[in-house]
Image (cartoon, rainbow, N blue to C red; front, side, top):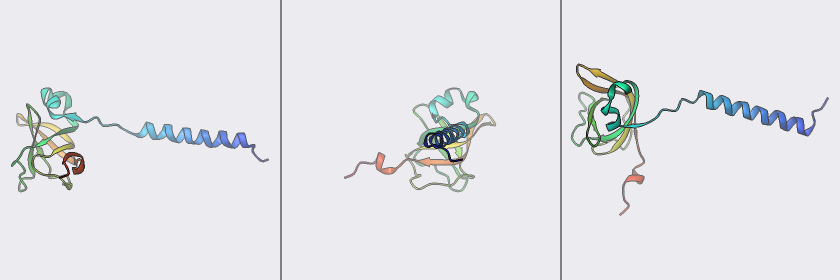
Length: 127
């Protein structure tokens, strides 16, 4: 028995709706926080964190795989030994870092899993 056109549209529409609902249910949005907000109360952000800040000029240490991420009033040491370094990562750039924020011997450290830089054309003027 052949399905009518309306029945076929209903089946296709229902299938698309189910796929969209499944896709939205499996997406885990990760909120990005600015470093000053995180460091005002780091205990509430400990664990997995997604933090945005600026790389302090002269702080990138390629031997120890660390750099300092800063905001307006706070700084944070980032260990990037487990993260790939993207193009555009350099001193003075605003970046976002995903990783594990923990208190290590009295000072907070972010163990980076992923470093994200923005598109340079968005931030640099064309001359």
